[in-house]
Length: 105
Image (cartoon, rainbow, N blue to C red; front, top):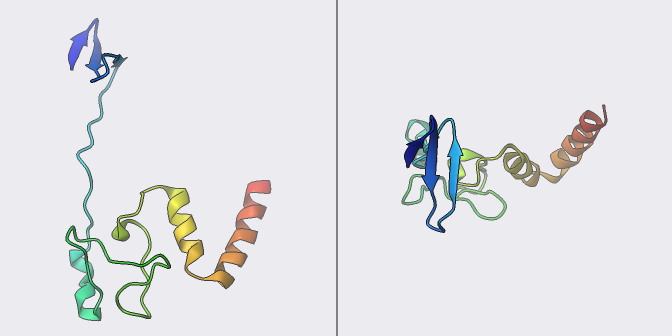
């Protein structure tokens, strides 16, 4: 990274460079699950502290589901919405109908 004519210039490994006014550096993210005390309910965390879920978002406790940031899935609004839809087919149908009306208006 260098400063060039008042801009920030970052040279990539490929040899290409990118210039801009600002530089945002993200060092990663980690779950904030300690305060939830999920182990009291028998819910297991992985080695990074995320709630362990299967492909249906079930935790290690059969009647408890987890979605969103605590599961380590991609942190995008559309991904979280799809996770939520996946947890319950009846709720999914109603939510999808609501979403379609919202998009059309």
